[in-house]
Length: 398
Ligand SMILES: *[C@@H]1O[C@H](CO)[C@@H](O)[C@H](O)[C@H]1NC(C)=O
Ligand SMILES: *[C@@H]1O[C@H](CO)[C@@H](O)[C@H](O)[C@H]1NC(C)=O
Image (cartoon, rainbow, N blue to C red; front, side, top):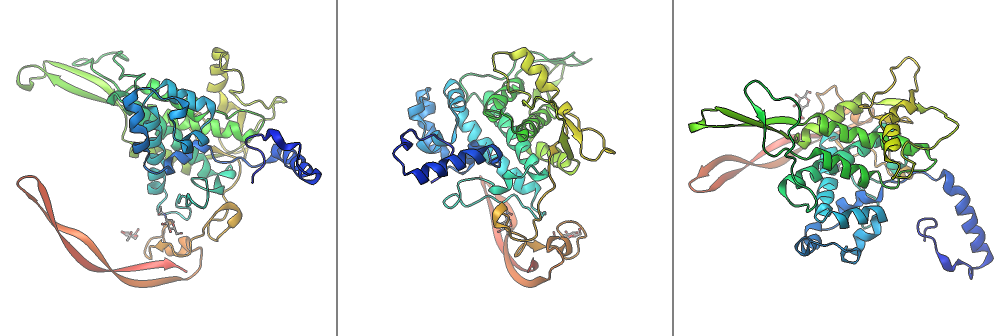
């Protein structure tokens, strides 16, 4: 049984020692380590498409229609957002999964490889590492926030969220031989939704909130920053007498690459003491203008840990503490260590055996691998492949 979380009203009848225990638990909650945002677990819910599709049909999502597993992990504000924007739950679930997939791609060659926990055993997605305000965790916040921005924006264009469309407003000056037209991906809606949904509940005195909120915003910013212009010619037989252009989302891989670059250059910061440690958006949401102005400058709250470094900009990931040692197993932080990880004997990078195995030995094995090969396209419409077997030398850390 956990203390904290939901309050239990009927605690009075408990034995005195239990009450004492509750008191102690309450006393430590102030310094309790930040946990991972619960909504991240949507990525682990079995087959969300199944449980959601009925609701799309009915076009209305009441709280009682939500799967209990989902209801449990969402805050009231998040549930209200999903109710008000039918179809958005699917997009959020897709976003959470995309974030996991992209993180594992970006970190495949690193000691920490973004592995997720086993759902039945642990109820978090990435595990206890998230209690640390380190570089890796900064990346996770930015990536999950970017992913929701991306999938919600895409869903608007696809017409699967009732409350949004693609964006027909032309943006920016037109060119010499083209003009704005057609249906742009609605990044304004996607960003706004992500800000409301992903940032929900991140307020209070904990300085971690200002770090997490900043990194969330960095994620959204880099989706917007990488929008690309797509154009189409009109006119007789493609003569291109008229050319119209619209804004298209970047591929999510691109967003992952950019955020990985920011991970490499992330800033370790201290939070300026301001007497008032209120986080940038701790104000009531109805004070929108003030709120916005404070938020935009949130990065001004941070100063570099190393005074010789540049202060972070609004596009930089920020973190508070150095990463833990990912070499060896650490139960307290849910780190599995690099034993058994594959390494590359000729690489001098992080995936090289020296660095990956942290100076320990590595095993070498020759294994047989199967691969699809000599694929041919057969009319119509199948691709036929052979299965090729070959021997591969695999090095793994001991
Ligand atoms: C991460 O590494 C562990 C071994 O340390 C391995 O079992 C797991 O499959 C890896 N995960 C990914 C996503 O590569
Ligand atoms: C190992 O590293 C070398 C040098 O970086 C690279 O050329 C090679 O493709 C890598 N091998 C594998 C299996 O990744």
